Length: 350
Image (cartoon, rainbow, N blue to C red; front, top):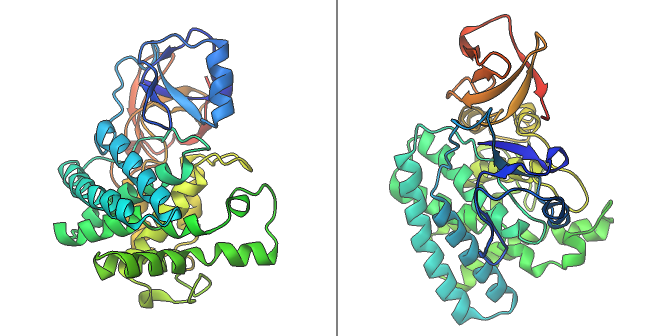
């Protein structure tokens, strides 16, 4: 199985992974041939690409760091929670939050069980469901960092909950501002900058959740050098959870398609994170993040410096720019971490 961007899809390619709608309904089943009408629909809903099965990827298994059913369940619960928060329905919001808390505990267990797994998954977000899928991805990515730095289960739960809820304050921001195509005015940007404090106040006043979790919501847009908001905190004055979530939030936003721009490649997003290490982001957590998230996810076709095309078959912690690859033409297997004279120069769209 491998990931193919929408512009590179061809008719009769075979779907490699079930596709679900925003309402968690099965849209297309694994094994379905891709038609021209399907490709057009994928473009309309904002998918970056899909997973396909073909001869060059038939033996490649792409493992999500959490179970796919669990991911779909927490996306739905997050959607419920945000909807009820927007409607000021405290009773239903409390129920949705309680359900989300239980799922966060299961996600923590999944990630602890897969602690040695590199994050390889390219998420299949749609425009309409972006906020909820983004929230779940930020929780997963934050927990991967938390596990890597040996947090105990209690702290991981609090981190996961804060990360899942980090953007809840956006339900109080006008959607026309959130989804505006083009540059925001100063007054519009000021409204956006209110969402961390709005989310913090909402959670603190309405629910009994750990203080570390709602402080993380407040801090997730603070920046290590003091250029963030809402309070311009610097360095260690930013909560630990806030510093971790800040990295996960920016990374997942960068790789996501939005109505107003195309998402970056994982390699480009990691480069941005590391470029901001010590200024925008805590350098220790940025380094941990870069060791745990694949620059070239499994199933990615890549161009090599010697002109050959290969497919990534395995990633290694600490060597995410130097994966194990298989040359497509000859099926030769190479571990780039042990080879000095070959580099990956880009993504091959085949």
